[in-house]
Length: 197
Image (tube, rainbow, N blue to C red; front, side, top):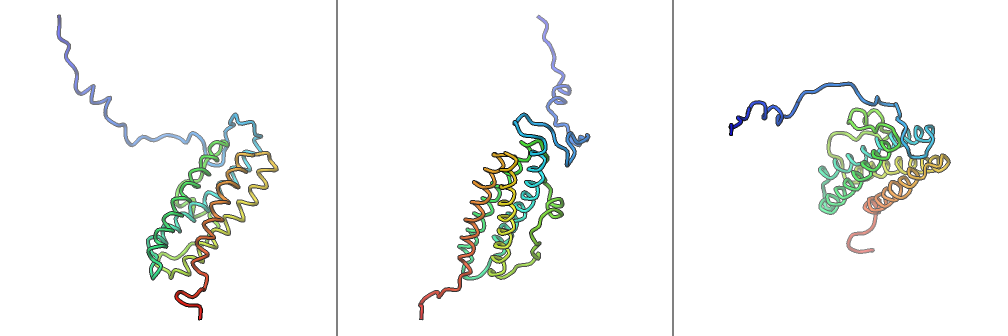
């Protein structure tokens, strides 16, 4: 029986990653595809537009928590360092859920930092370190922006009978942001540390 020889170069060619590929977008930004989810195209488009705004603001809030996690200082450093990181992780979960809902509706989710920076309604903090009360004030303002738009968007989604988007907004976005705002706000209540008189 004849022994077959293997061509190592041919085998390696199949195992080598194909890098530096280029191609056209398969779905341009702002264009919708029809998904079989029993919702009108109009309802899907309006929810996608709203959710992309909310996504940009949620990404910004998440990044602001991470910035403050790294730059927090003072006597409450340890507890705020941990709290800000926890809130950042919870916002990361919301980012993923919002982006996936956008894709599920047939849209394209905003994703890259320059696009987020152009879209967000949350004011940009300076690059440098700020005192804790200012960090917290910025976070509370950002939460208010997210909560205001999420409540409006939830009502609109309900009117369009987009129950999935409404549920995401009410059960996840609103409840998470309300709870985080409460936890953060309690750190700037002016109460005595050791005695009341």
